[in-house]
Amino acid sequence: MSDQQIRRAARTGDVVRPRRGWVARADADAALIAAAEVGVVVTCISEAARLGLWTIDDGLWHVGIRSNGKLLRETSAHVHWGTPVVPRHPDDVVDPVENVLVLAAVCQPYENALAIWESAWRKGKVDMEVLAGLELPPAARRLVADAMPFADSGVETLVVPRLRWMRLPLRRQFWIAGHAVDLLIGDRLVLQIDGGHHIGEQRDSDNEHDARLRLMGYHVIRVSYRQVRFDWATVQELIVRAVAQGLHRARP
Image (tube, rainbow, N blue to C red; front, side):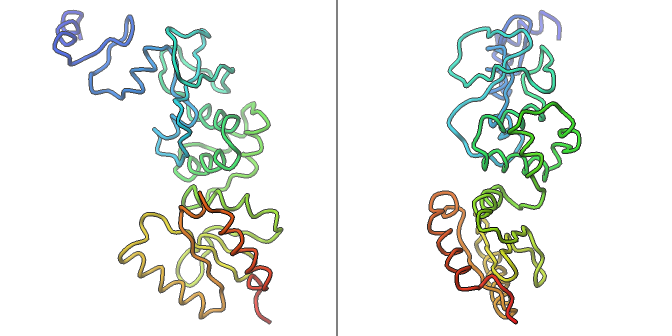
């Protein structure tokens, strides 16, 4: 666009000028326009959410400082000031996915960060071998070792670290009776986690699969997303009591 066309579009409200030398369509992503105004990149869980990764919102807007190390104006956002593992171009308004994941690793609780990493891996957003070759902080290096691509959703990722203390085999998305179960604990204890899609035909199919698993000698515990997120003590008690009764072991 010529300068004259830009001025005309600005007068009609078709474009906005976030800062000197920058033009954006009026219907552009508001987060990106704000990033241009402040002179930052959207990163950490804010950019992870924009990428469609599984996240738990902490109520903050996460941004990273650019290479010049200064803000163009004050912001209420949570600013990540550290040097990124992948250099940021001066004109970028979103962080490379590698930076997003590394910042999530050091900023978020371990379980939440692991869910983000596994979501990125599962969706093909990152090459884990490339990521492992970067200069990573200890929190990110731990996630390189722990992340797996098998979880069907982030809430499944949250469960495994919480059960490691039991020192039992934990197999995610394990195929039994024609379907994958969310988590197989030991040899015979199945944990199924319902999401928002557990209605109608999907629910009928899940119920049938549960019945077939029981006929095959498996013990099935089915819980909801809400229970895992907000009532973990109850979920854990159900699992612990089942293990105490030996329901995780194959019958002789």
